[in-house]
Image (cartoon, rainbow, N blue to C red; front, side, top):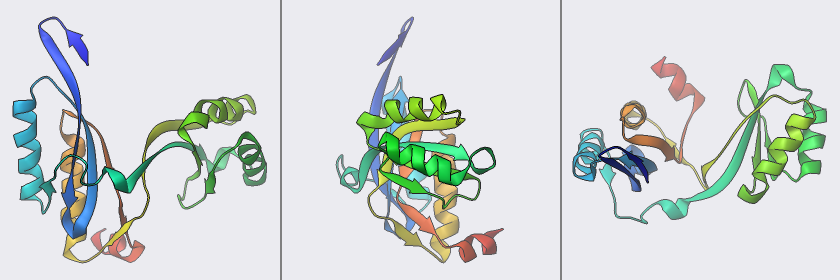
Length: 175
């Protein structure tokens, strides 16, 4: 909770489902829960989703540290060696531009500092990562992407986490 003169902001986590049964979690900071909840419920229901009960999807996510390093600025083998030596849990190259390193939350700071001290330019954050993903296809794709954009643009929503995966071909058809 943070305070401005005469205004009190509070933090909440809202959970729900999007098109195709996709789990959605939102970190909210608002000075007026009575305005924010109906807003978010409206956005969700208008776009193929629905707000759920507390706890309905949070079990589908786990807290992880995620560190990304631009592929142009790092030698893959050296980065892999250093990451594993520092105790990283996973090393991933799915992203076209970045190497993605996953850490346990308690090791995030140490691994980030270790990589920086080795000269790597990192971007990192602690957040929620889906345990399993849901593949979304057909009409659900467009509707889900619109819903995610609207949620991310909402002034009271700080972070949106989801467990969807979209096939490359589906994305190319949209483009």
